Image (tube, rainbow, N blue to C red):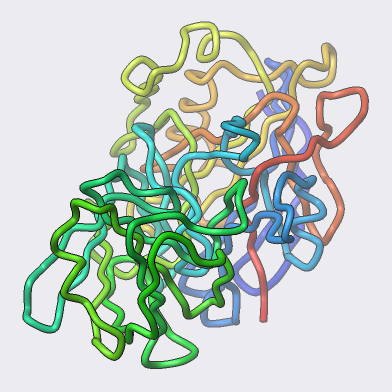
Length: 365
């Protein structure tokens, strides 16, 4: 049974809904985006994080201070004092590579794709020989070569490897995106160590002592760097991890076991954040459900959220569309929706909005 329903246009093709379902009770917040109309009017999608020198976590409202709307993003954890998430691509640059959970990518044309992804990197030498890159933004083992970009964070101020190559795009500023190829020039070769100080259009290749394919690369050479994010086939501008998948091909499909999440996580009622899109990929939905507030909004089981997305949300939307593919994002105390710089939902922590690893933003030029 439905209660109140507030509808607020934010921009051409972008609408905010605040709606009540009495049987929970639940308060649900939805950003409904007609991708084609919105993009024609200058709307874009961004994954945003704290890009200061120290990095770290910020509230969604801080990350989204200039956005039309936003929701909190991926789960996070700390490893060796470094903040880690699932896949995180920001303006074509890779922060973190995929984990074994569902995620969403936004292609350069604005179209979304929810899937489990795997990623590989490599380069072509001037001889035409293809070389696999073994990792991103970490020190190489003896038989590996690893790529560092300007987003690399290290406890040291230098990269240590047997030999390394400072690379720069031939075309600056580059328009490089994941699932694309970039031609770079080798500026210099260095042994043992070099400063970890890279510009947006610069990279390092760092090789171990037993990586023979790296020893015939010389300053002045050109290499073709490439990256593949499967099963996506188009250039990728943004990507955000999450999990589990909630809706597959229009049907409830809460895949928490396959994605390594507990039954309690799925079956207890919590505040929730989710993302989904319609069958024709034209309508994108950002969704939050308030929770842990008896008498106001109790939160949802993942099955309840998936059912609402796949069967009921269209009853409230201007488009009339339901979710055809849907993804859970971080929830609980992190669940936050921001509209026009203000938090519009009711975060469950007594202290208010939490800091988060990243956020999904809807922006306008």
